[in-house]
Amino acid sequence: MAIPSVLLSTDSTLKTYAESTNSVLEITSMLFTGHSVKFLAFLTDMSQNFDSTWNSEQVFGRNDPIAIFQGTTRTISLGFNVVAGNLKEAVENLKKIDVLASFMYPSYRDNGTISKEEGLTAQQTVTSKHMYGAPLIKVKFANLINGNLAGSDGLLGYVSALSIVPNLDNGSFISNQNHFPKSFDISFSLNVLHQRTPGWNVDALDGEWNGDAHFFGTPKVANTEVEKALEDLENDEYNTSFDPPPEPIDLYGTSEQTVEDQLDLIDPFLTSDQ
Image 1 (cartoon, one colour):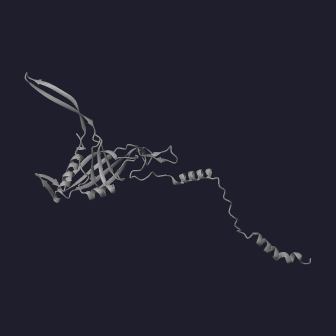
Image 2 (cartoon, rainbow, N blue to C red):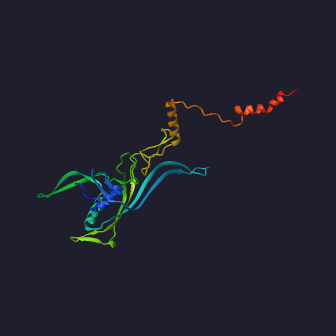
Image 3 (cartoon, rainbow, N blue to C red):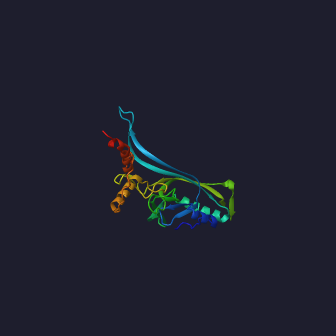
């Protein structure tokens, strides 16, 4: 069964602004195609932690422990508000939050039906299931939360805790005895699963970053000095023009005119009687 179809916003002005500025928070379930929900990015918190794990051992005769690197994990803590100015928007928001909560659960597959006779007349049917897919998600917000692959549709990971808090002090819209809060505070932590291992390629010239971009959408750091040297070398190789050397600079007063002036000064002494 597909998830409910929900709008980014019922307010056309907010929708246009969010889409034109890429201020949209998109969360996608990896269990099925098309299971995605979008929120207006009223972000209240976004912190990212990069934690490196080292296995250290203290040995005799050495002040510093011997540390062996094991890996680096990335965790994103995200908080945002979901607000509504009318009943229609509040209904849509609650649908989106309902879908988001469902992304925290796995998928199951039926094992089949088992029939068990009880006595001579009654029959009981039991259907068993087994867990089939883990609830992985992708989160995307502009360039600040995205994968480091070209054309990435988000950052893959799993959520350890999702918090949904209605702000009841702000009131609710009521329709058919159903309550639709005007605003929610939502927060969760995303444990990132790297689809392409981040790090440096030692086989590339002077090192090269793996991936099409860094963590926040910035281009890969390049060694500009090495690239410029290679570019100059390539230009010299194909440059067949000839530039004449510049005129020499007379730093010590040895120009032709200066020599003639000196000869004029000593000429009377050379032609005098001995």
